[in-house]
Image (cartoon, rainbow, N blue to C red; front, side, top):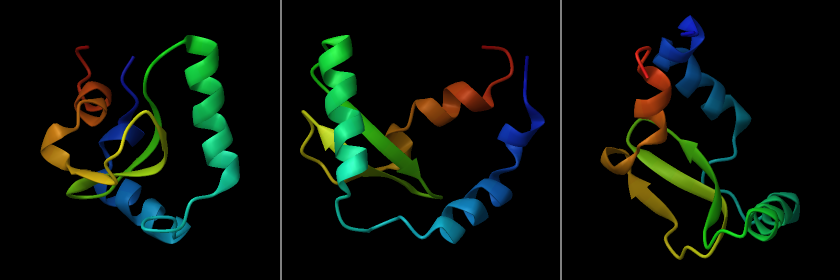
Length: 85
C-alpha cells in the first residue's frame, strides 16, 4: 500500500531541517543502535542515514567510513517513493 505522506518531499525536507540534526556531532545513542544492528544481524555495515535534498548524511555508522554521499546513490528513497514496489 502506498502512503501519500511519502510523496510530500517538501514537508519531509522541512521536518528534517526542523530537527536540526544534519551535520551534528556523533551521539552515543545512535552509535549504540548501529552497533546493535551489526551484532544482531551479523552484517558488515549499519548506518543511521538522514537524507536531505541532495545528499545522504550518516548520523551514525559502523563498517563504513564516508560521512555523506550524493543523493544519486540513494536507493532507499527510490524504494519508498515507488508505489509499485
